[in-house]
Length: 400
Image (cartoon, rainbow, N blue to C red; front, side, top):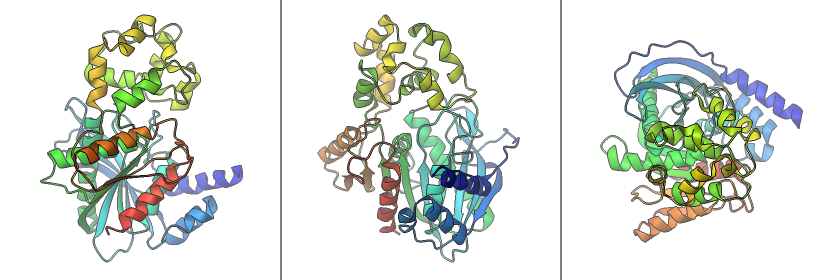
């Protein structure tokens, strides 16, 4: 098995290898392509071989119709504070299509390290993007702010900037497609898993509320997303029990402090030795993985906090922190386009109750084109990824 995974990695890395290059930061339009380069071409045969090697049952669920050419795109967008910045993403285009193709924006899950993104070493999500590409979708995969070729700390779980960087990636993709002479139609699909589910919901919401004159969402599939940040997610991360991904807490605290300026001295909220251990992980260099942060964390995430800081959070006397959490909840809004959420019932990392709460909120508003499915009985946050994405693909195909 290890040899198969290693071989798969070598093949995919070869297909997607892309050297980072210096680009001109002096840009003036959101979605303007600053720099782009071809990042590899996969034939139908090579895609079929890769997926069959990985999982023959999985490969049988894919209609291998087109080869896929990939492009790394660096484009203009804005940061959380409206500052003009650049971001990167991967564009996957089906080769040889004779008709205009729909566009699908696919948002990846939580990462901390700079290059563990679609334009870098994120093998799983870039390959899942190709699964859509070979079936005739033009696929956009944003790296997000602070990741890929974007500088600074990633504003983790910040809905507004997740949406703007995704929307601007779609704009950049359209600009690149026009340059390549590749036709696209007006169908737009949105999908993402974990943080990508949060980003997908944020993007769908932003498009309908702010960009409806430019985009129309055909359908979206926010999968296993932490939609109730201030409720369900805050409770499980702050409770005095072990949590499978303890690094979520400091990542969120550093992120929201970046965006909202909550703490004058963030490290003073941490007990020793975490007040000195944690800062290098979140200094904006983005050189470490989430797992490396977790290895330095206590099993109970809130044990990094001083008693005073912990009490201010759980008692909600730190109103700025709670306002930030509530600002990024994504279950209470009105959708027009159909939504199908996928979330496994064995997920303890991002509990399925997040999606259940979102569904209840939509239904309470009389919105009937929102659904929730469990694609794998007992599936965990990790084992649910592939079944969810492929279930979303099959659903999207009904709109093509």
